[in-house]
Length: 261
Image 1 (cartoon, helix red, strand yellow):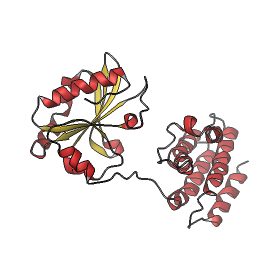
Image 2 (cartoon, rainbow, N blue to C red):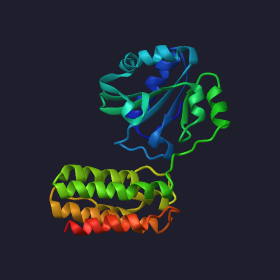
Image 3 (cartoon, rainbow, N blue to C red):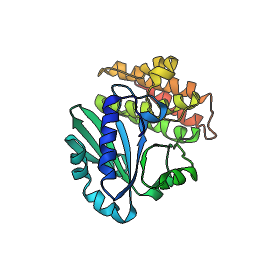
């Protein structure tokens, strides 16, 4: 059995594996998430991929909550449509309190994946062979993808600031950090783009700059943060200049920001 550094996660993994082995409708159990980089700690979630036999998949999808109940003291659960993963069941268990993602998949779905999971249990060796003949690909965005979006989102946030919709402006700044600035910092550090996850640890110098895009619910502070987002974006963009660099749009949006002073 695979060994995890988090004791609570290890105990839960073993319960799920034993439950699956007793149910002939599963062919394997995989572990994803922070376990892949040996970064599990006392605050880690447990990301599990439950590989279902094709003929049993529809039935197991209907029984996901019942399966979760059989694995521990389930407090609450909901499905992952909000992240485009309807087969995902996001769970909170108690004793101990633990966040666990249970993703039910068909074997063939593993051929297109973003990372190589760890095999906790394989019924017949099928998973080893399947993973060996395909490669993962993280969905990193291009410099052009960032450029197409950033100026429109900056302008959108600025218009909400101008109208006095400060919460909306602040929420858009959070989107810019998560979808633009964080991924660009990851890229510039030679890492896969994972939003703002662990930037404090692997890029403290950029974490300091990213703090400049945080703000209070005060108009001058929101404006300062927007300008900080523009400054950081241009700094990060310089390392990987996009082919579609839109200087006219950049000038128009920064001029609009200046008019809000």
